[in-house]
Length: 435
Ligand SMILES: *[C@@H]1O[C@H](CO)[C@@H](O)[C@H](O)[C@H]1NC(C)=O
Ligand SMILES: *[C@@H]1O[C@H](CO)[C@@H](O)[C@H](O)[C@H]1NC(C)=O
Image 1 (cartoon, rainbow, N blue to C red):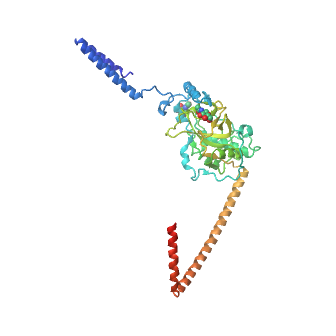
Image 2: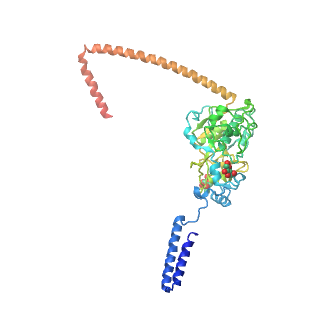
Image 3: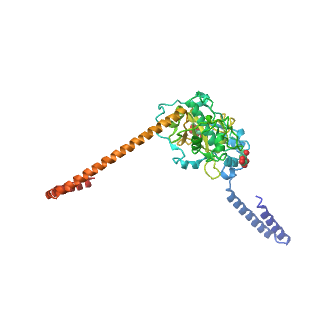
């Protein structure tokens, strides 16, 4: 309202001046009415500009940048909107984070990588699954209780947009252990190596949800003990580790299934890597089954793209009738349910595109080599079959040409067969019309 003041002042001054000059009281009343009219007009413009409504608390993208994630009014709003499905609380992880920090510091997964799916170097879509047992899945499954020795630690990514790296290294570690829980018990492969060394990713500025797997399959990962997590501090790419400790992925793929396929995959081979839409109320989630409230705002990254957060799905369950995934985030143990969240099935997780990595254990490498050999043999066989078929075709063509030549010679002598040809043609015509 500060801008209105000079006008009021001017109007008052004008009235005073005219008063001094000895105008009649009628005239003064007239100016007073003009002044009031002016005020009404100014107020109308003010209403038009501000939409006449009080400022929205958790409104559009622009309004919120300076707001704090852990704003207590926002947290109490979320708690009431969630109506008991989940609770909200401030977590130490997001202490002093504004939404601008979220926008520029939490843009974890490169969605543009999606366009690369199926391209050379990126992930192929998973084929038909033959090595996986079918049948009904248990109603609850949690890797932490089924295989605690294969459960990796919860990372605190700090001010480093690295959910893609933490999730990728985490699921691969669990999967090595899942395949051989004697040899790979407690395995913890290094996400920091991806952050510091993978040139296709952008370190603490995020990385490709699928392209990160081409790095892991080519280069492999050292254990955390050799390349420890730097929590957002700059860390040079380290390679003076025991090379024999390096582990790779092999034949990882993008699964275009859904709930049933994801469950079967986790049950039979271990956790999968997934992307979820990042909404503001998830940042203050503190327990229960998360389902975005009607007032939740999708977060957008610096380029205006919807922000995605990479997580590990390690199991599932049901709570008061709501089916949910058990996901592991990278915001420390004090966020959510000790670093984990239960997220409603069919809500924010992109269930139609999850990554199914394969641990390159000695057995998997041998299998892949055997398969490659088999494919090569098959290719050789196909080539031979094609060559034989080509010979057969050529032979048939030659025979047909011979027959045609013989027929032409015969037709020269047998003109009376034309009648039969006419009959055939008219029959064909009738059939054509009926169809
Ligand atoms: C709470 O969860 C139930 C079951 O999933 C759902 O139907 C309901 O809409 C949720 N309520 C809110 C406020 O999100
Ligand atoms: C994260 O780091 C960036 C610069 O690297 C800085 O601008 C931002 O304020 C930091 N955010 C938090 C929450 O510390």
